[in-house]
Length: 230
Image (cartoon, rainbow, N blue to C red; front, side, top):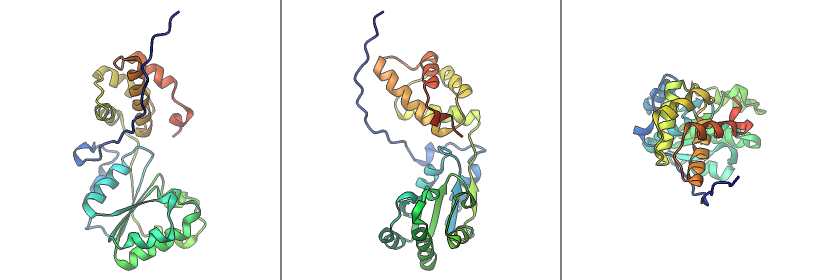
């Protein structure tokens, strides 16, 4: 049996849109959106957004940085030098703060500098600080000053809307019944939705075909264990 020809695919980087009009509001993220929108009228100088991968934390953080002019720092690569530089902006975003690892003292120092300077701080993480396994008690005490706003996993309606947006971002036209088929069978995780759409984009380009239910079913079966984890 002859294998159908596949096109050579160039792996161009894909950037999702973080525009305000592209944020899809649902019960799982409405409280977090409202909290971000209340800036600069927060009850304190810090706020922590906690939710699973793909729940909308990065999108909300991007909206806040656009409004506040915040400097963005990844929690997994904090350094003492960058900590000093970041506070001068008056607003700071620490993304994936729960990935701070061995830089706990640096994060503690950074938060102290920010509070002393009257800077605003937004942190994102998958869970609240009590579940980070922190070894520096003073850091946990400092983080507890930040109200935690939690984002939940998406429902089916939001999953369908996100799939439609992700396909549109990649200029893929997918029939509504195919999107509904995917939404009812995939894990309710927006992170998994991003990975599945990327796989389908590559498969459709390689085969020179539109995304179909059969193709979607095949790709979902090939999803790695990472995509099936909570």
